[in-house]
Image (tube, rainbow, N blue to C red):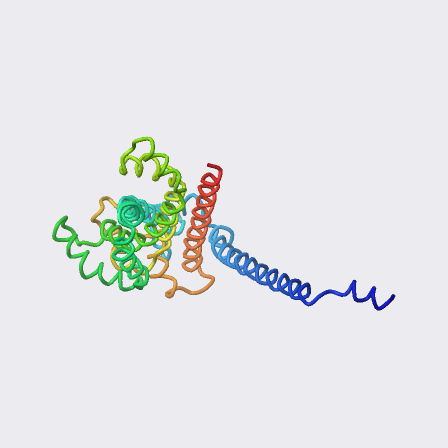
Length: 306
């Protein structure tokens, strides 16, 4: 009787494997959460030191227009106005997304609705090639091709928001296109069949039914592309001019948060004001990445509700 009870209460081999798998999964999840929290804590502790240790006014930092951390302004405060970089980052991000979205939607419609076989055969390898190109190659091509082109057409030095926008447009185009293709493929087939059965043409079906049903997915792809553009560093640094000034036009040298970070982080001493303000810029980048992720989740949930 005791042997029978022991056999019945003893965990099977499959149950032990399942428990072991749960423990491994929990450990992996806990490790990921720990890494993310550690990154947030490290960047926040360094970035907030500008305001709590160096006593820099947060409004002067966010809305100031003069950037020279090694010098003191006429008001006795360090010249650490980050507004030019913030504006530069948002301008190149939004412009690149605005330009990339129509091209991505057009390519996705061609690959999914118009000519799936030819689209997969022609555009898919091109998209995969663009994804695999390193950022430094994009920056070098922009430096040797786009900057002289902008200089010859629009004047100026060629460095600036316009050149950076073109580079980021090419860089985020594969991401937005791929996710838009997935959004169009996720539209149920009976939507198309019902529209055609009611007498709509293929173009009316694409515009009135398919694209509208895929709007949440398309918006998600655009926001994801904007997040990629906002955090790009090396390529944009090579073509934007890296002048910490509020851009007066699209062809004047400007700067972004990432370009100033990559230029200055290796030339400062840890714990100094010059180093702390760079960490503050990194904190802004981290918070903006969090905002983009939240937007993606909100848009995705709205799409699920529909």
